[in-house]
Each structure stands twice: as C-alpha cells, then as structure tokens.
Length: 136
Image (tube, rainbow, N blue to C red; front, side):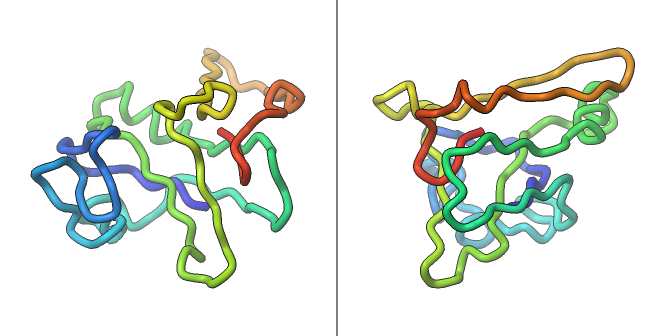
C-alpha cells in the first residue's frame, strides 16, 4: 500500500467517498486521481501487506514529506493511502474511520520527533483490537 501526497486543499474526511472529496467537489477520477491531479503520482512510502496478516501495526516513512511541510516548501494537504492491487478479486483491505462507534478500532497516528535520527520500535501488543485487516 502506497502513501501519496494529496495536492488539493478541498478535502473533507467526513464527506469524502469514492467519487467526491467534499459534498460539492468531485475527485478528478473515482477514488482520487493518483497521477498528479488529486495526489502526486510518485509515492512517498510503500508498505507490503501479506494475506492473513492482521491485526498488525503498519507504518509509512513520511520523514521527507514532513520536512517539506515543516519547511514550507509544500503545503500539507495530507496523504492518501492507495492499494495498488485494489482491483484484484478476493482482496479486501480497509481501515476503520475515527468516527467508527468502537474506539478500539480507530486508526492511530504516532509521530516520533527527534533532532537526531534514531531507531524506533513499536509495541504491537497495544493494538490487539485493531481493524480486521490492519491498523495504523
């Protein structure tokens, strides 16, 4: 699954769906055009998901993009996660939204901030109640 930088400001998490980024604005293509219009064509980071591998902690390396946001060389509109095999029959990869009724299944964002590079280890046992396929 690839993480691509979003390029458009008009995006509403609680309104976005297959065809629209807000109630009034459509994506250029269904599910967003990851070709330089809705999101950059070049991915920032990619993570492999294995069949039957759930629930697990997954992380995308977004340090370079984050540095661009902090340095104001690009505007932070967020990222979109794209499964490159989304059209493959039998594949069902999804994440719960933070609006989901059971907070045990909400996605999590963990930011590690450091002035010097360091290796960070995540404790996966905290995430035993994650979404069916994966949790972030």
